[in-house]
Amino acid sequence: MPAHTTDDLLAIMARLRDPETGCPWDLRQSFHSILPYTLEEAYEVAEAIEREDMAALREELGDLLLQVIFHARMAEEAGAFDYGAVVTTLCEKLIRRHPHIFGEADLEDAAAVRANWEREKAAERERKGQSGVLDGVAQTLPALVRAQKLQRRAAGVGFDWDAIEGVFAKVEEELEECRETLAEPDPARRVHEIGDLLFSCVNLARHFDVDAEQALRAASHRFERRFGAVESRLRAEGEAPAPALRARMEALWEAAKAEEGA
Image (tube, rainbow, N blue to C red; front, side, top):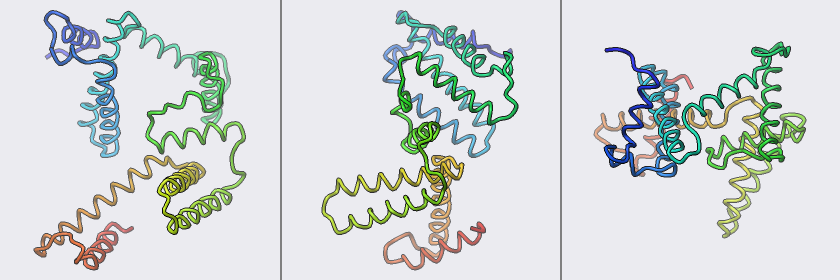
C-alpha cells in the first residue's frame, strides 16, 4: 500500500466537510466544539512520550495532526486562512527565530540561542500589540505550566529572587499561612493561601530548573503505581482498601516504595 501524503489528508478532510456528501458529525463541528479533542490529543501525545511507546506516539501524533487539519479546513471555509498559510507562517517563524542557522547571527551556545528566541518572541508579541511582559501567556494552559511561564517571563526582566534560599523561605512562609487558616472558617482564604503555596512551589521548581507540570505528573504516576501495588497485595490476602485497614495499607505502601528503591 503506497504511503499517504499531507495532500491525501487534506483531501480526506475536505470530503468529510463537504456540505452535500460529508460526514454529519464532522459537518456539525466548530472551532469550539473540537477544542476539547485538540487538548486531549496533545495530552495523549505527552502520555505516549512518557511511556516511551513509539507505536502509540506515531498514532497520537497523527491524531494531533488531524486536529491541525480540521481547524485549518474550518478556517478555509470561513475565508480566514488555509493549511498552506499555517505552514508558511510556521516556516517563516522558524527561520526568523534561528538567525544563526538561516542568517548571519553568531549564537555560539544553547543559552545564546534561547535568549535570542525569547527576544524574537517578545518582538512578535509587540507587533501584535502585546506590550506587557506577561501578555500572551494563554489562559487555557494547565495551571502549573502557566504559573511557571509567568514566573519565567517576570524573571527575564529581573523580577526574581537573588538566591534559592529566598524561594525556600517563601514556601515556608506560605505553608505557615496555610496552617493559620485551620483556625478560620473562611473557605475563600484557604483557597487563596493554598494558591499562594502552590505558586511558590512552582517557583521553587523553576529555580531547580525542573518542569513543575512534569514533576507533578511523575509524582501522580508514582502514587498510582504504588497504590495499585497496595490494592494487589490486599486482594491476594482476600481484602480490599478500607479505613479499617489503614495500618496495613501504610505498611504495604512502604513495602512498595522499598521495592522501587525510593
